[in-house]
Image 1 (cartoon, helix red, strand yellow):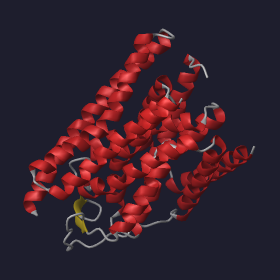
Image 2 (cartoon, one colour; image 1 turned 30 degrees about the vertical axis):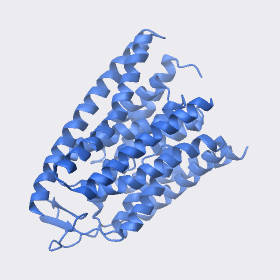
Image 3 (tube, rainbow over the protein chains, first blue to last red; image 1 turned 90 degrees about the vertical axis):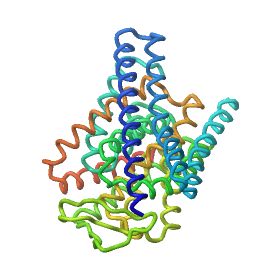
Image 4 (cartoon, each protein chain N blue to C red; image 1 turned 135 degrees about the vertical axis):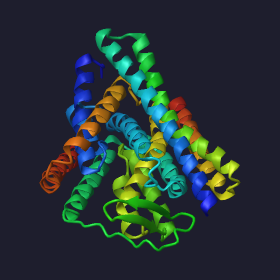
Length: 105
Length: 276
């Protein structure tokens, strides 16, 4: 159990780093894009910056799930490899659902 | 609806207010932001929910980044329950595309009413803390509790119930654009043996993934307007920061009573609008 605790603490640090980078990067793109869009209405660059910001925002939790899959694989903790992989698959399923609804419109 | 600078600034301001109240009350901003965007700004409820979900993701990531490393977030429990919340969220995102505007608005009104009543019920709540000599098992946890002067250890009980409620929370989250912590946290605390602070931290950690599964569906369907989402995200982030600082000084009991009353009125308005 103690070995697990040490490895879990490592995963927690990795996750913290991913979340911090994600928050800072998405915040920066969204802020610059938003200010830009207010000064130059209809700017394509501003719209692109904000879209990138939202992409990073949504990629952040997905990245930390992916990092967890990797870490549990290294730990050979197969039940948790399975659980975290299912979560990733569910995200893939929502991308597929998004595409299905997109095509219906 | 045209995205004007005035509208963007309005939503930024609404985000600040929603984020501040959300952080102070421990509810998240979505429960206030969605009705504002729908009733006041006049956005369709799916567009409002999509914007709100992006703020949920941002709040989850920033709050969890600050908390990670203090063992308060139960990673393993969170990862296990995410299987259920993400599945629920996937279902909720799809359901949102199939239900009518009126139906979703009525569901939101019901949810908001329940949350307001729950808030009134917990006005004088004192949190029960479990003992320290517990073997936490695979899913349990341990964290340092300065208020209690020691390490708190707990085991997770009734996992199937936690999974079921997580599924429902995920579903509600992406259908209505809220975090869903309000459903999970009381159940994890009251029936599954998870101390309130650990339950809240773990829930806040999970809702990022939950909301992402839903937000992707709205985004793919063109219901996520980037400029409005950007304004809301930045506003809520600033508002939560403010709320956590002001909230310490504000009288929580009076604030909860006032906000519960406001929420009941807003819920009634949403329900009536849904009837037309």
